[in-house]
Image (cartoon, rainbow over all chains, first blue to last red; front, side):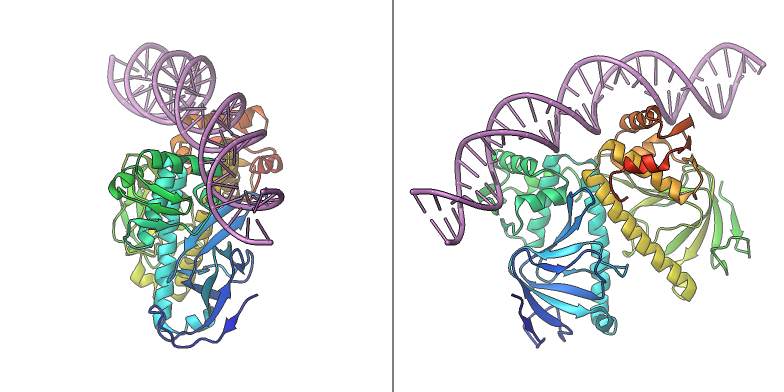
Length: 211
Length: 211
DNA sequence: CGGCCTTTTGAGTGTGTTCAAATAGGGTGG
DNA sequence: CCACCCTATTTGAACACACTCAAAAGGCCG
């Protein structure tokens, strides 16, 4: 089900000395669980990951999405507040925190990851506090597009439910907003996960403010 | 307008060696501004502080409230993402980051502060993403009560607008929910800022899930 | 082709917003 | 000390946006 390989020098540009183990995960497989000790940190090699948080009443919250090069599972507390699952078949580099803390370069990368994580979480806060459904979906698409490089083609590795749980909306509302954006010519959809953003500037207008 | 005093050994139990300067701020006075270099950290000695974030379209977001003993302005980036203002006349201990980083004990306190800040911000995220107005206001009151010690009396140093901007609601909705909680006997209000929480357990029910 | 899952669409409802006005509280000057 | 003003809060009524429930359409795999 899950394959282990010992780390070896690879072409992955973000990790010089490969101070960890590569593991592969299949779609929807759990990388780590909520409430699990946070003694490891993770970096996406290929594929994509989401972090989720299950709440008492069954509602699910998606904390973020992670793409190749991104670190995740970097916490301050010694427990994971979120669980992490592979969005699709993915290769993840797993690194011991104790090892990471001895590698000065890696340590710097983790610090930057934590810093980015915090500012992302603050942006997310603003998004949730006072944005309309259309603004949320637009912001999301812009964010995804930026993180996938400048191309006007965009692939969404997550389903509508994941988007909804990330944006604090229902799946129906997300779907409706996507339809609306299509109708307004701001996006084109070949299928639900493959988009083209022909008018990025106009789409950013729809966000109304900084992400 | 603002008085400076050199730090001196005081009765404040949280700071042993007072490695900073005490400053007093009047109501609504700015402690630091958004986009200002974050080379100082702050601790509330007396009074209360809010952090705010002004958005492009004029909407305001309140990031958090800080009470005696709480640190604020602890950032990862080298700019403040939020501004900080005194809620009422307050005494603030101002500490140079460079000095703080040399004090092993203080450093530990700042780390814990950053950690708490992050988990608070995640709780805030959950609150904003899927909670009803009543749940938000209830959670807020419970949180405030816990941070002010176990008493069933609660003083709110912030106005309804601050509460609204913190909870992602309008001032009218906050007011209505307060009225509703009164009607349901979950809180008592002598005036808008002075509450009594006679049925804490019942109030926590209204939060529906972890803060 | 048929079954299963995801996404989309539709109709009706409800919660929170908006706009507007009334009330309460606090400070100032007469 | 009281009248007045200014601000903060509360209340009311109508509306709008997103949700809920329900069903149809589209993909994918067997």
